[in-house]
Amino acid sequence: MEAVEFAELWNPEPGWLNTASYGLPPRPAWEALQAALSDWRVGATSWEPWDESTTRSRESFARLIGADAADVFVGSTVSAALAPVATALPDGAKVLTDDVEFTSNVFPWMAHADRGVEVAGVPGEELVAAIRPGIDLVAVSAVQSSTGAVLDLAAVVAASKEIGALVVIDASQALGWLPLTVDGIDVLVAHTYKWLMSPRGATLGYLSPRLQELCRPSAAGWYAAADVHSSYYGTRMELADGARRFDQSPAWFCFVGAAPALELVEQIGVETINRHNLDLANEFRAGLGMPPSNSAIVSTTLAGAQEAFAAAGIRAAVRDGKLRASFHVYTTRADVHQALAALKPLL
Figure (cartoon, rainbow, N blue to C red):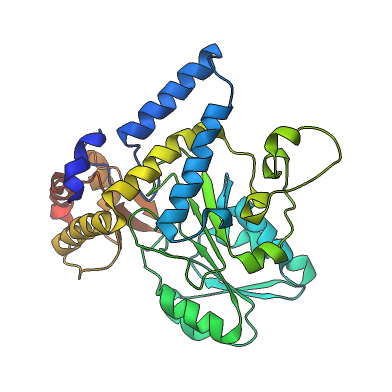
C-alpha cells in the first residue's frame, strides 16, 4: 500500500510545506467535526457521543506507540501534561535537554528552579555523551522542531537506563510519520495538531506505571474520576486507576476531529507515511545540493528563500533564522518541484 492511494482524502492548496506548524485534516476528521458542530449549534445531542471520540483517540494513540491504553492520559497541551511529572521531581534534581528544545518541554522543569531544579541544555550531537551520573531526567524531542534532527532514541534510552535517569520524550514533531514505541521511555507526550492532523487542543501522553505512582494528579477534576458521571459535585474523590487519573477534561470537538485522523494514520501505516515523507524530503534536499537525511523536516539557510517562497505561493516556516519545509502524507512531487523552482534562482 502506498500513501498516494489515500491522497483524495485531503484537499490542500498546492505548496503547503508547513506540517511542522500544523497538519491538514483528512476528510473523515473534517466531516466528523462539522457534524459535531452542527449538532452543537442546535442542541441535537448530549456531550457523551462527542466524548466517545476521546476514548477512540486514547486507544488509537496507545496502538501507535505500542502502549496499553490504561497508561495513556488526555489533555490539551504538552506543557500542562508534563506539569505533574515536574512537580514529582525531588528538590535539586538535574534535568538535561537539547539546547534548541521546544520550550513546552523546558519551561515545566525550569518553573521549579526555586526548589533547586536545574536544567542544562547541550547541542543535540552531545546529548548522549552528556547523560552521566548526576542527571535525574532527560527531556528531549524525538524530532527537533527547529532543525528537524531525529533523536537517536535507542542511545538516549540506553544511556539513561545506565544511570537511572527518567526519559521524557516530546513526540509532537514525530508521531504520525516516525515509527516510535515507548520501550524504555517513562513519559511520551504528543500534541496531535501537527503530523497527526487533528484540531489543536487534543494532546495525548503515555505515563509509565512507575511514574503513575510517583506523580500527584494535581490537576484532577471530574473527568479524572473512576466514574465521571458520579463525580460532578461534592467532596468525595475516587480517581480512576492507571493514567486516566491524570486526564484533563477534554476539549470535545478537538477529540472529535482527532479520533478519525489518528485511526487513518493507523490505516495507512506509519511506515508507509515515513517512506513517502522521506522520499519527498530527500528529493527536495537533493535539489538544494544537500545530502539525504532521515527527517521529514528540512531546515536550511538560504538567503532570500522566505521571500521566494512567498512570491511563489509556497507556505513554509522560518525557525531560528532558517527556512523550514516539512513534507507529509498529502505532499506531492508537484509541491516539491514547485518549491525547487521558486528557489532555483537563489542557488
